[in-house]
Image (cartoon, rainbow, N blue to C red; front, side, top):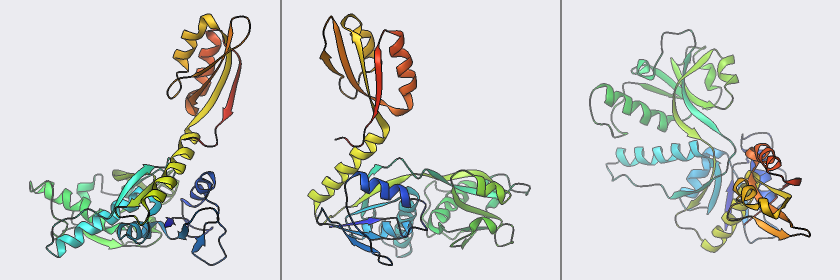
Length: 313
């Protein structure tokens, strides 16, 4: 079985380090030789293939590999390409050969329509008939096809093959420079913090896709059991990153109030102590732990501890 990974090299790929950390947490042990894009996993009968994020939906969608980690924006771009290809050939629209297993809670960004901050364009409809630069040509074409159809009071679900009035220019890098250099009137590009966009004198006027890193799988995997095992391990790591383990001591008479604050994922673990006291352990969302500790103190909890969780099932 092959697991394809968006970490193309140590120097590139915005999902690189987070993906490697995720694989380490899932105990996927491998050693990647320099300049090689394939690594055999030591403790599982699988191989890792390191590719640019944009290529991964193609490999998974065509069934060449079983699992992939990439951005949701790249999955949607591939899906749009499949639809466009089918429409151009006059074939029925088909779903791509991959499906999302889970969001991975890192790599959040937005694919946004951007224009010069001090320019004449203020909405996406202002760009109809103009030139738009992007590396997401299929999603951008689909987006503007819908805008053009709506502006003409036509179908709400136009075919990607319809002739666009808007010119889509494919750019592979430095998309944000396209407006300043006169290549495009607007762009469609990924935005994380927005710093690069603002530094280029651009502003966002609409969002095409909200993205996050995702685990996708082939609809026809070569080893479904191994796919489920890897997915289960990764799901455990993601859950562990979201929660911490909260432990505290409290008088038995106050258990009801305390467990309302820390109900756990299913139920808290309660252990009897001497003299009418109990020890409680419960999983708590990491982002809420400070407030939970405040509330536990108010109802009489003592010896409150918060422990990291490295993995869970």
